[in-house]
Amino acid sequence: MGVFLALLPLLPMPTTATLKLPAKELSLPVIVGSEGEQAVDISKLRADSGFITYDDGFGNTGSCQSDITFIDGDVGILRYRGYPIEQLAEHSNFVETAYLVINGELPNTTARRRFGDLLRDHAPVHADMEHLFQGFPMGSHPMAILSALLNSLGCYYPHLATNNPSEDLANFEEASAIAISKVRTIAAMSYRKSHGLPYIYPKSTLPYCENFLHMMFSRPGEDYTPTPEVVAALNLFLLLHADHEQNCSTSTVRMVASSGANMFASTAAGVCALWGPLHGGANMAVLGMLESIHAEGDDGTKFVEAAKSGKGGHRLMGFGHRVYKNYDPRAKIIKASFDKALASLGIKDDPLLNIARRLEDAALKDEYFLARKLYPNVDFYSGLIMRALGIPQNMFTVMFAIGRMPGWIAHWREVAANPKNKIYRPRQIYVGKTKRDYLAIEKRA
Ligand SMILES: CC(C)(COP(=O)(O)OP(=O)(O)OC[C@H]1O[C@@H](n2cnc3c(N)ncnc32)[C@H](O)[C@@H]1OP(=O)(O)O)[C@@H](O)C(=O)NCCC(=O)NCCS
Image: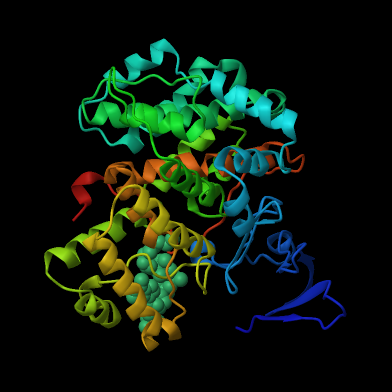
């Protein structure tokens, strides 16, 4: 059965594509994005032909049109709202970038001050919410606590979580500030809870990152004061994670939002999607890999050979990316800032860092990795940065969630504000049993 798809050579960009099906030929519109990406619009395909498309893992499927983030993985480009990630990393900080991602423009002085005030006002959690933390057993995973408590925000702010997109959008500024601010407080409280430590309340005088570190590491009567380099490293980590277009958790947020669900419910679902080791858990896997190489007394050479052979399911964690077939631009930035942060923390000779550097050097010269376009991704160094900041491993994915919150919020808004929004509902190719009749229990084998 022949199915043939050809782009008609219309200049400068094709406006239609021809799809030859066994009994029919269809002319399909071609959509071109602002950076020249082309897509064949198949939204009427089933109605016109009875066919659907099949794309396991969605690697070739554009699920929406979005104006938030642009990635060109072949050359290693990442831009938020048009701004190159390198420029934001150099000149901006997490809060300003969060505003940009959410609202589409960098804030002027008044807007920046107002956003900062809202974040400060919303830093504490409702007193009743503290009781929710008590209900979790000691040792609970902070990601489970985070998703549950984010969702519960809809109970504390029912006027912001009506599940009527126009009403929820009318209060978007307040809801988004609550989500950005409280995700940090809940994250720090879930860490304190999981370690049996007393909660430390936010301080209204502290900026976003300093306040988070205070809630994590201060003790009653003894404030933790980070160095500027540590604050800069945290800002950078969060900023680099602020959005990454249609990844698994963001697509989940959009999926939930498409049903009309409120922002808190949608972003809580994003936390659950992020929890998996193939997504937000990869930086923990990198650290686990470095620790086991160190424990075995390997300098990395044996591990690289094992990863190349694929034996025992070994992979060089933190290498390769579904989208980037070049150096992940975020990895380059993190790596460049790494030494400053380590020096300010007095870390000179970290064996895991030395192994990571040797692994990277070896892989970047090796034909196996070059031929497959496997370069370090952001997770290769981000776990080491967090470890240096004193963040425990079970909080790594939570840190990613704090950073990703602006992106999730921006994507929630894009869906909620889309007048043509349709509930997301993919089709499938059914490969199960064909019709059969019910058998009484005594007749079953
Ligand atoms: C991220 C990842 C899932 C992307 O996968 P992908 O684009 O679907 O690529 P594939 O899994 O199809 O791999 C393509 C080839 O490269 C190899 N490969 C991919 N990543 C590899 C790695 N980290 N180490 C060794 N080999 C790797 C595969 O074995 C395959 O080889 P083959 O063609 O000889 O069979 C994959 O690179 C990976 O597992 N990386 C390690 C985990 C990680 O760092 N995840 C965080 C991503 S942000």
